[in-house]
Image 1 (cartoon, one colour):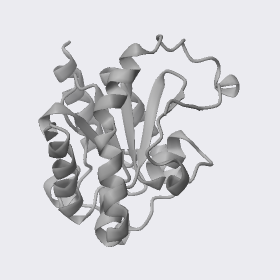
Image 2 (cartoon, rainbow, N blue to C red):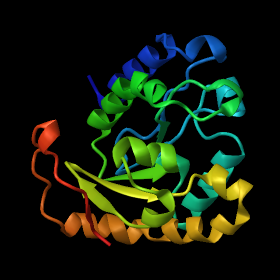
Image 3 (tube, rainbow, N blue to C red):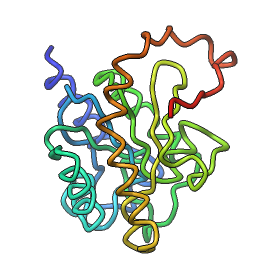
Image 4 (cartoon, rainbow, N blue to C red):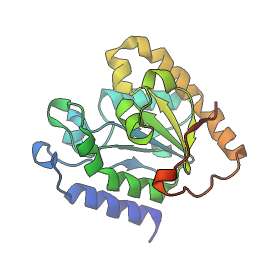
Length: 206
């Protein structure tokens, strides 16, 4: 099977799954984009517009994300965009850790297929799933390697829309992405991750 065919299979499984959030939303929302992308952007979960259209980041936050990509010479079709939960929580509330865990298998399948050079964590919920214990305000704009992946946390575009004081930080972080991709190319390959209880501590790249 090609990558595109496998991605369609993952998307089908996401749309047809049942979880504790499924009954309260219109539809599950799979990831979207290029399965050959070097970058995966991971947000929190679908909002109202995403729930209606069945596609991630298509509301106001998605438009801002596309603008930030354009600033660094990228288009939405160049990257892959997904969320830690695939179903909209009621009233757009924060997803609980158990709800995130329910969708972890789908996210793992997406990442295992794409094998991105860089995972951009959009906001604190994506950050906490991959780099637990970190605070977005302290680690944003700093790349960290953990296991086989390099993570780059920044603010969620929705947070910058609600709090315009974060907008310049978000722009600055995105401007680092092209140089970071080049730097990752210069790094030695990451070793295979050890057993979960022996995972190395994340180490800063920038």
